[in-house]
Length: 154
Image (cartoon, rainbow, N blue to C red; front, side, top):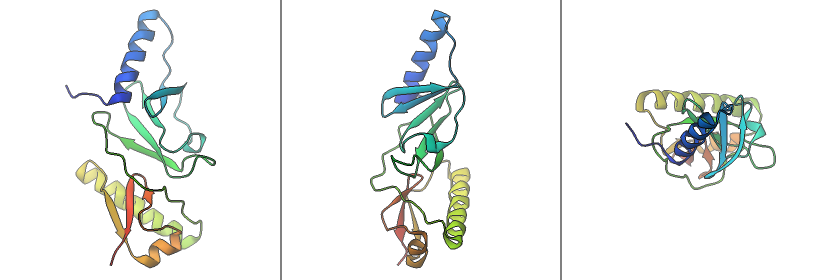
């Protein structure tokens, strides 16, 4: 059996203790770093939590809130493996513009990241975009989107 990461170990401990005590066990557990901050019966929209919040379900599936900012909440959920601690990516989270060209580039980037994850099982460390693509999205080189650093293709 593979070793669980820190939040996976915490949830396994909480679930075991609650079940032994006869208490009801919530479906999702929210962590800010290594500390439990909330529980819920459903995952809900990412804009309700701060970026970087880790959510673990009773079944062990884990998500990380990505994008956005602390004031407006996260932009979305990114599924992560419960069996390893992923290295932290340094950089500011990107906040895309809402113009049609930016939305189209973001959709293609999401498709590429989904495809890469389905083939490799993990996300790439960096993605290179053309300078005009980054500027139309309102992004700067080195910013992070869903745990992937955006760089300029030269």
